[in-house]
Image (tube, rainbow, N blue to C red; front, side, top):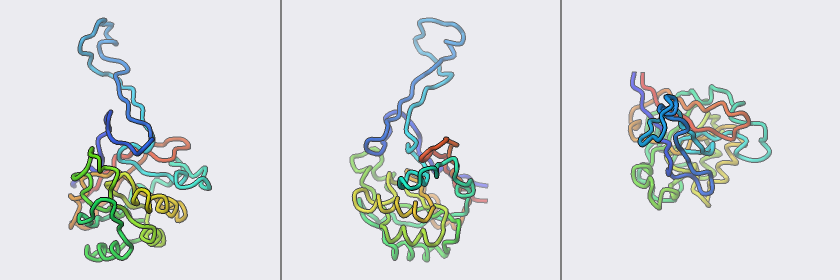
Length: 229
């Protein structure tokens, strides 16, 4: 069995989407505190205090994030089967900044893998955007699918699709529509994935992206992995 980690690190100062909460991390209590040592010069952490938003790093969106009419459809209410699926990855490494991925392009890329999308699948889209632009001024300008592509995926009744970028669509162009369509068809997406190039040309794998059980949550960080048996 081979497990490939698809999740970004979470750390203070990491890029987050626009006005979402910045990550803050500090030592809450050190081993020296437990031992009653005062005037610590180099405390060793025993427990960290972590502050961040639900949509930090590699994460999945809940339906109540997509539109206000889905209030109550929170991350803790979503079936776990949505996060434990079969999946495969398609190659869009040729896409540049803020370029759209159309339905026809997506369908062609899927056909070129020899696979077909099935009900309940997770489709991952490799653009190499992380390698090219993470922590640069272009990080928020990734490529993404257009509304027609999202509609097509929803009609196929997949569980989710996943991208390396901060948005499933192109920010200011298709991103809001893509979110709304995910809500309409009750499927979801993962953002800020990593290592997707390691999945190309390898066929199907088990995709696992389990969220935290946040009561009323609009999404959650995940430790996404691909498992090859």
